[in-house]
Length: 171
Image 1 (cartoon, one colour):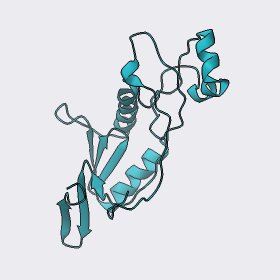
Image 2 (cartoon, helix red, strand yellow; image 1 turned 30 degrees about the horizontal axis):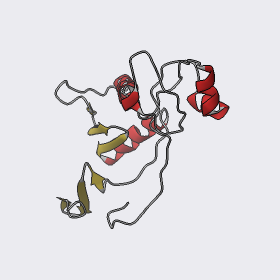
Image 3 (cartoon, one colour; image 1 turned 90 degrees about the horizontal axis):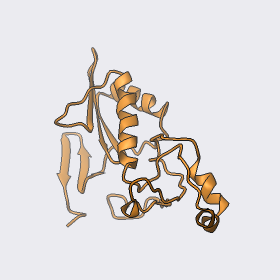
Image 4 (cartoon, one colour; image 1 turned 135 degrees about the vertical axis):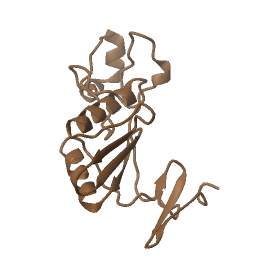
């Protein structure tokens, strides 16, 4: 939904039931999600799903996945590790106090990238934002949603004189 509480697009994905995970055992569900950027194995979960859910459980096979599945306990960590390694190669740094905020300073300005699960906010000078966006798109499938209008329950309105932050939609 957008800032006017209107449906702006529909999203759907298959999600693994991570809460049912047991150490050493993985429930199989395939998914094609923008989030699935963590890597950890040798089989494509979606291809396995196409074989048929019942078939998988009847024959009790085990697989190692190429990508983490949305909903598994380790998925977010794998995605974060991949993003962190990728940004480190470009010279971004973060601290132990705020590990999901990546900062890069340059002669022309700065760029700050904040990550929350599978969403990124990019802050900085126009040129630095464009460069960061291009760099990220070279590795990850991304959609540029323009200026941030919602973030962690906050609504942001952009004006020439600044930004108004409120929670009127939430309340």
